[in-house]
Amino acid sequence: MDLIQLLELFGSGVWGTVKLFTVALVGSLVLGTILAAMRVSPTPVLRIAASTYINIVRNTPLTLVMFFCAFGLPFLDVRFGDSSSFNSFAYATLALTAYTACFVAETLKAGIQTVPVGQAEAARAIGLTFNQTLTEVILPQAFRTVIPPLGSVVIAMLKNTSIASAFNNRELISAMRNAIELRGDLVIPILFGTACAYLVLALILGRIFDYLERKLVILR
Image 1: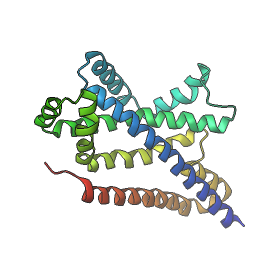
Image 2 (image 1 turned 90 degrees about the vertical axis):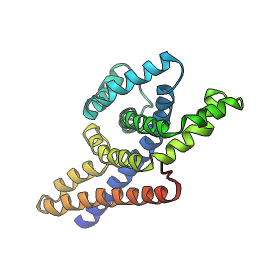
Image 3 (image 1 turned 60 degrees about the horizontal axis):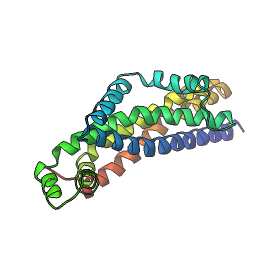
Image 4 (image 1 turned 30 degrees about the horizontal axis):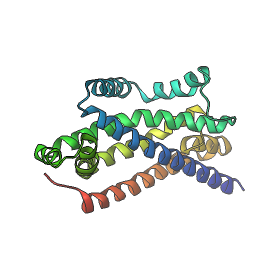
């Protein structure tokens, strides 16, 4: 019976990690793309705002960002519903998104800089606006150029989801703690199993980005 409970704990932990990672991934890609676009915008205010945000959040420990979201936002009466578990999930997702988006933006900005200037000039010559040039010419190439480093950022975010366990979230580390409380005599196998679970998830992501790199990457 204990073995079944352990498997159920780890199953719920893996699902919690995957759910948290997936939502934060989508959010960080969207926010990171917006920040990268602001960094290369012709409007000085947008460039300064994006640069300030990135420099502050990127150089702040993720744990502190998580603390702010988990305790600062409730203090400011910012809530996402009546369920405490959903609020904890939302705060953790927001923290991971806000933090990881900075690294996505810097990676994407580096990709934008690899796009030949002549392509942007040609786009303007045929009448495209800055937004059209960015979304239809520059960003598609930038994303394809930075697939390998972007994969490293995404895998790092997967491992960063472990911090969410300290803020009342169900994921692999919280499942590991509960499993140790249930079977203290199996500490080493439980720790090994948790490490293997992260390893499998990271290897799956690595394979996905290897495939994308082979199919889409642009070498310059």
